Length: 137
Image (cartoon, rainbow, N blue to C red):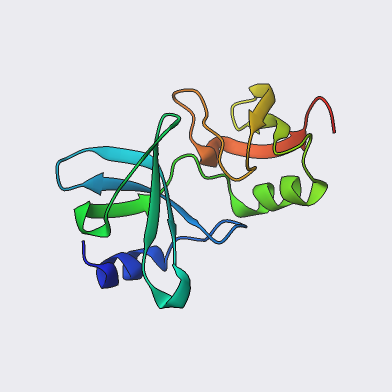
């Protein structure tokens, strides 16, 4: 995908509080990554891309990307902002209770940033209806 087409697709996706786009991408070779961070570089360079495969970072070039969509792990902005404003639970992490649409509650979920939560299958981030600080704060 050329950088202009990528930029056009990203306009419809909200940035995180850190200024990143967190997206799902499909590559030319058919692989899909659901947690890809894209940030506009300094001096108007575009884009800087960091992708995660599980806990491992991988390198992606914009030219490898065929499709881009919102990440299924990105928490709705209003919920992430609320958790962010309450502050970290400890140095560099948030301990959260995550309330899901079907009534389930995931307790003491630990994340580095409150706008990305990897939920168990079959849940997606749009199933989250409320987030509270859990455990220590």
